[in-house]
Image 1 (tube, one colour):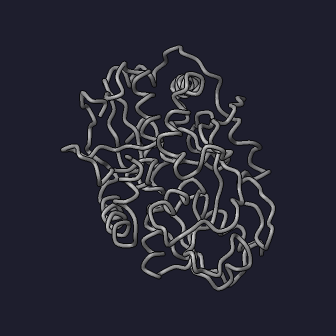
Image 2 (spheres, one colour):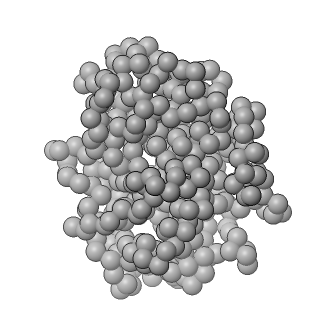
Length: 338
């Protein structure tokens, strides 16, 4: 009933466009979201047809970036001690990714809370560290500000569909992976675009600034694996802004994570995923490079979250309606540590 109500409320160009435009404006002003949820209710692959799947890791930088995290531990260090002394966890999140981190416009609560798969994980981390899922402050972070927000200390961590890559490992530390995904193309149902192939020739493609999608597009066009006539100049602060551009006819296709693309297609029945995902990527919780004790603690929490059914329950609630119960993303990735 809940899922049907949400889909009904978000269906169509008008409903999604209105929500997305509001969210886009909100992100423009809300690098820092002064919203503390202390409520008692707990409130890439190659172009061309049939391109092979690949990863975004560069061979000369590192191998298997998702296997570079530290082994789990519960010992307390300076980073976790600082969080406990402050009394709350500061987490960078999205507030406009349907079913990941968003404000449900159909909520009957007086205050529309953030909810979604990433929000569930952030609350679980707060509960394990501080004894309550409500001892948390969410800050809305645009895609291209995730790393700066961590490095500057604006947040303790980012839980925001953030892909673990070799390039990012130079700037931040990551937990073990908590979700498997990859890049995919989203376009109108009637579009001649068939996927990440030569049907993108001459098409205007939107991606989020600072995203692995844009990095892949730029690298493939430079190497000739993406048609040279493909226009990749349209980048936006948040990937949902691409859906707005697509709805307004300002771009012809969107490239984003398959999990996010599926959520957008669920919001708007006039668009669909085209072709298969053409990269393999893993989301991780990002933290400061020197916060080794916090990284180990989060990895311990993730291990428990997988084992006690918390991860699966969250997936079934938020992502199963769009990704399905039999998707390869429906099982948490098996962690590997360095």
